[in-house]
Image 1 (tube, rainbow, N blue to C red):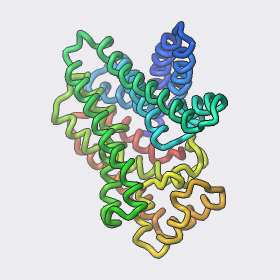
Image 2 (image 1 turned 180 degrees about the horizontal axis):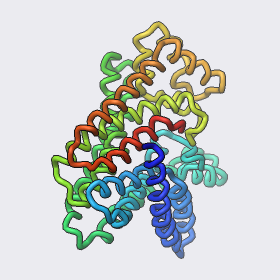
Image 3 (image 1 turned 90 degrees about the horizontal axis):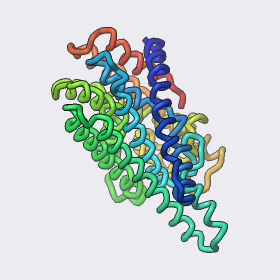
Length: 356
């Protein structure tokens, strides 16, 4: 099953890449050098992505209709939305790297800090430019949808769902932004932290990464509300499992494409963190968790603490249970043909075996 999905993914990714390359070529045709320079930065980030979400858009459409290439503009729109929101996310997380590349706010901060002694001024400029470029990606995504599907009777439902996914993602991001501060300064009961973390996983990752893309494709194909509910049940379990896995890899993998140890520096609220709060290793973790300056030894120490506390096993077991439950949900969905269920099963297996 996994090989069947990988083949589908490879073929679809190639087609979406071609769409993105064509879009990027037009993007950088700006006469004003101030614009052209930053659209080049956007172009750099808007390329060489995994395109999993765009592929799921295409797969959602293919669950109901065979002419799957018709959904490629919707895939492009989703990937533009992805680029835009990640530019904003990098500012929030103060990350210097994305997909192994310098982030837009960091590039401009470094560039303009050479011209002023006021580092706050340069940072503010870098952040402001990145906010503008992130906004551009979000608005461009809606424009691509409108231009491509003007005559499609399903456009209204697709746009409504597309924007609902964006708003749901923002709700998750708001909790994700506030929770670390409240946890760090003990403004929230530690027993409620995991509930909020699971809400972040549901609102932010599950909808943004799994439910939203699949639903968008289904709606473009004329799918029903009952179909969307089925996909939401499936996608919520897959998405939460995916985020748990992402947080585990954020601590233990060297291949995540972002600054190593950034989750520790950001005081990131994860299921690993919420679990260790109820163990004897809590105080040892809090001595280093959230510190701005960390080294390889600190990272290794955090890795060891999560394992000693049983937090690593707790997270991995919960992840595997959710992946298994998602397949049980999929098996009960009657309107998806068996050959296409195999693609979704292969997708779940693909996620389970990733290391970045």
